[in-house]
Amino acid sequence: MKTSVFTSISVMGALGLLTAIPAHALGLGNIELSSALNEPFKAEIPVNAVSGDEAETLQVRLASNDEQQSRATTLLNELT
Image 1 (cartoon, one colour):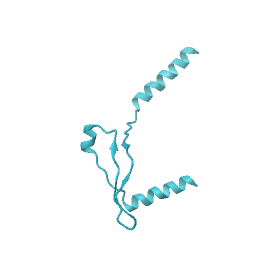
Image 2: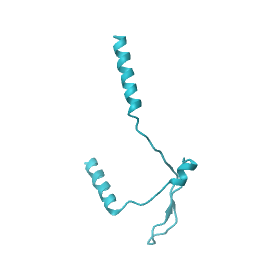
Image 3: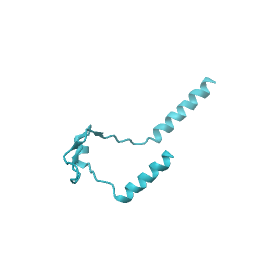
Image 4: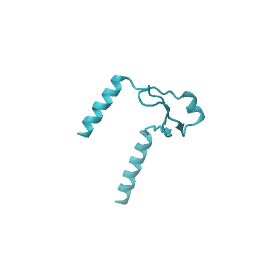
């Protein structure tokens, strides 16, 4: 019985190593708002916890209207 459990755990561990999923983390600071009411929105969000190499290749953009609508629809479906 112990051998069977050990074998099962070993196989699960090996499969876990073979199917590793890369994870990327990005640390964001507090939003710093620079615009007033009825002005175009202007804000900065500092990026923390990023290495030098990552900072050089980091690209940030706003989502398109289609992407925002798609995410909002998905979120609403998950909440209901």
